Image (tube, rainbow, N blue to C red; front, side, top):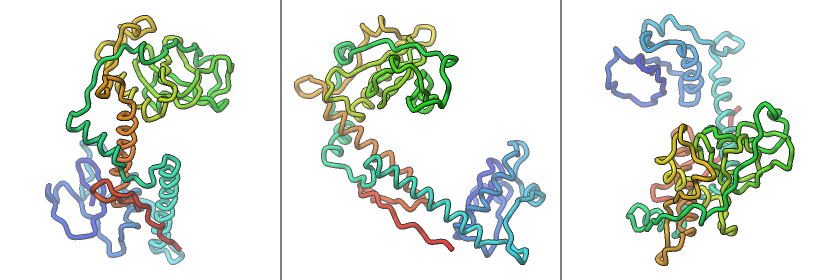
Amino acid sequence: MVHSNNQNTVYLETPFYLKDGHGATSVLQSNSLNEISALYFITTIKKAISNLSYQEKATKIVLKNTFISLPTNKTGELDFEYMENYIQKNINENLEKMNYFLKKNNLLYTTLSSSEKKAIEDFIRKKIKFIDFKIIDVFNIYNSHNILKTDVVFDSGATPYVTASEINNSVVSYINYDESLIEEGNSIMIGGKSLVITYQSKDFYSNDSHNLILYLNEKERRTENIQLFLVSSLYRSLKPKYSWGDSISFTKIQKDTVFLPVTDANEIDYEFMENYISAQKKLAVLPILDNQNSEYHYSPDFGVLEVAEKKEYK
């Protein structure tokens, strides 16, 4: 089925009703289609109509005059077996990549622990107390080194080259450069001009001396989860204060505060941060994987994420 307004193309296996009527939607039917081969057709059709504008809709007449390229067998007939095998092979490869990602990040089994559940529930029920702390009391802060893009060769090494970009965790390339200018990783970087705040797990190079590098005072608390929580907290506390014309600096941040969760003794609650982010990582994976084209699924009550076996193809 192809919707003419937005060129959305979907496969429907069972009978259905059209909300907008046949005038807005074209139905393409074939007894040889199944949910696997349909994915091949959908990709091909989307490519063929990708140049249509909002004014030039994918109507029935337009589709009748649209040509798509499809594989054929030796007898000149459509090769559905090839299409199904091609799509299934791609599905299997993507499942392997996802499985590797889940194992690498310890997310293969996503049942929330009791501590993680409590962190989520306490936050939702507003049982967590937050207070302001001076940022300089929580972090050691330094200006970064200054390495201009014109001075580096992109993709020349293995060390991240970090800017104030919002894309790809601010990493624009991996370079080889003067090692004396490397910034220590497992830290938080604030883009001085853009106020983009990121957690950098590895040692890196910085593109601008206006960038600030923050190292958590309590070294034993420098876990990824805690620092990801701190990134969000810093962004929430600093964003309303600064703009491109009035950017943050090493001098200005001395007076700034950050809003953080605390224990009953009004000490920073690092355990809550750890459990909350750990839970959010697991919860974030679930809806991504729980879709009709995935072999992953989960139970509604934070159940175990499972990986089904790959389907065979000829």
